[in-house]
Length: 532
Image (cartoon, rainbow, N blue to C red; front, side, top):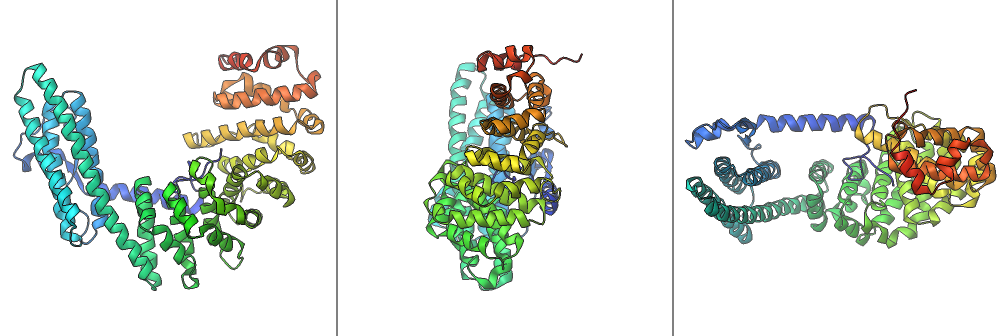
């Protein structure tokens, strides 16, 4: 399975180059903005005329001391929402530990946060709806009820009575959380509706750019907000932008936002309703668009064909445009000026090979193997395990075709696959280590499939692939103790041994080839590494 950059909701690959730098700056900047608005819990204790807690974890509690700037209801909702959600989770933890003094003080603080959110949002938002007013009332009633019942619990010493009251507190806390969630969703929906209306009504490039940027920021808050944006017409509005020549310079931003929204089912459905695939195909096949625009279109294609998302497999409209999209993506890989552009284009191709088997035949006809293998020697385009993960995914899926073997031999592809069996992380981050494991696993799978052809198998043996496979099987550190890599390597080794059994030592044959696969797997997975 493939993986794509975080921030796009496509998977776990960090974006290289400039965008990675921007993401890092944004994360730090956001943390510092939150930090300015936080203060120690003693301030609230003084305001509430309560004694300062002496408990060891008191200083770990942070509260929102001030609100966002005036006239910024979205940021107000997000910041207050984050603080209240955190308080609800912490109260639940303290309740499970029977820390009644902490539960009560945190309940009082929660009431203050909820009251502040309601009053501050009312001050900066448009006229409140009747539904919102009712939920606000229910929320504040439950907050008061929680504070009152937790205060009574402080006076109770009978354990049986306290146990029954604990169930009541838990139920009140759960209902309070539901009311808060409903209120926050209603308020955010209103703000999203306002942004979408603004995009639809605007013919000013600066207004559209600012509003689209706000919408993109919201998509980074997670799947629930992406669902709201999709339901309220965000996908329709963004494709409207992508169909206006006067907004061409905004296409990359709009497409990036669309890729984020399409991490949820509602987003993909809306994309299909507005013929979004056809629009993406038009952008990808139009050389007059900038490379950045076509790369972002490729990112949307990668998202809506992701094998990780079950709902993308029913995108019927994609098949109609698949040939021209695949052709455009191969061209984008061939002409990519940076690693990020190549990553996005190759990731889209990798996903398409899962999406429909016809894609592999198309890629063969388009000489995709030559394009991909040539790119591997270009450090400007292929310089990370994440990109090699996409390449080897495509090769693995194409290797089921008989003709693929001859193309691999012709382009010296076996040597490249051999190199991928030795993929090592540079930074040691969990994401990079996982990417290296995927590269090793898929390289072994590709080798096993291609070795149906005796010529490929003999070339693999000549390049010492069997020795490397044995090393991966016997040395857990070489495969980062990955079971998936182990199984793939055992399968590839057995396939090669079937063609060239004389290349194996007796001990390797008896332990790694002759037994059942599961027995060899158990032997290798429990093997202690030898340092002799």
